[in-house]
Image (tube, rainbow, N blue to C red; front, top):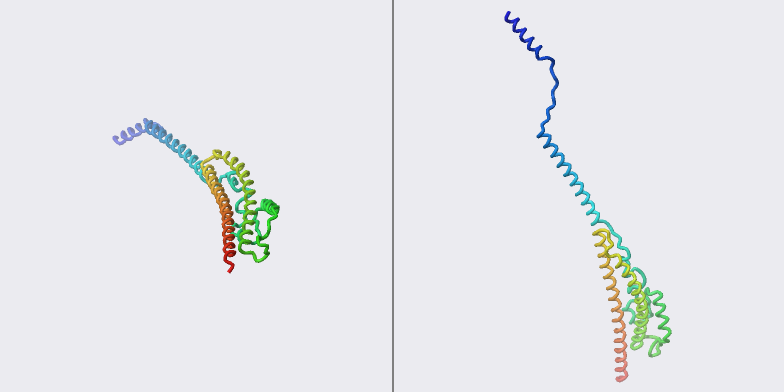
Length: 231
């Protein structure tokens, strides 16, 4: 009897509980707030990293790769006459036939001027062998001819370079980035060095003229000594 009553009590208890219900979701406000803050910070960091990557790529592009330098690259000896076209100054005083190097039209003009002076071939009148004052004289004629062509070429080049350098100056400050500015400056330094080299060549030509004059004086003194001491 007691067992029967206990079974009824358990059955009644189970009946009172009814059907089992599903789980109800629970929202933890603190955890949700912290997760939202973390997600926002992560998004901000990703956006910042994206900006840094863009800036780094732009910086790399600004300091790498070739840059055109325009007319600066041909401002000094881009065209026309250059002292490298002049005859070898060392061969002018040897008394041999004149070599015009690569003077071109400037050499032709110089030859026309020299030939128009109707200069004698030798001072002594001897055709061969050329020696002494005759050699010094021929060397002086060669030097004068070369200098005539060089002066004409240098004057023409000075005009062309003035125009080129003026145009190159207009490019200063127009480079779009650091690399372009550096390359323009480097090219300007190169053109400056080339111009200085041209000046050195012109000075060497002046020294060749002085050398020819000195050789003539020495040859004249040697002939005077030979005249005074025939034995």
